[in-house]
Length: 110
Image (cartoon, rainbow, N blue to C red; front, top):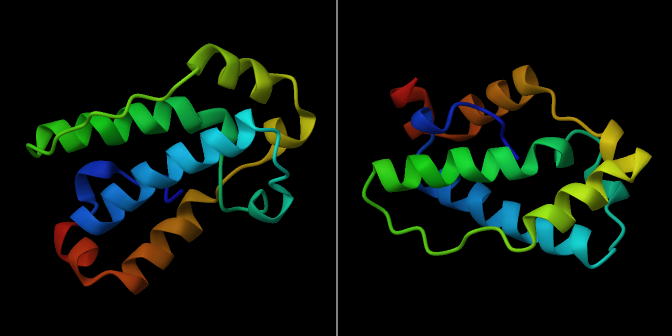
């Protein structure tokens, strides 16, 4: 999860992060272990809100969004009941720097 302003993201990173939100949500609901991703790569507490921000930007750009997050209440409950998921975060500043380094289109949109 990049956790940067979706308005500045290129199409590839916007759609990619959107897909990742669904994959992370499915993994959480299935009870899969995510420890390897919790060290700065995903922010479960902000997952639902982040998905909604990404979907809003997709619609704003004229992309079709036909994939609402399933089981939102159960997802939120599962996250809130897990100390491991609650303590995970993404360093937004580092993420921002990495996206600038990787993506010419992001640098141009910034």
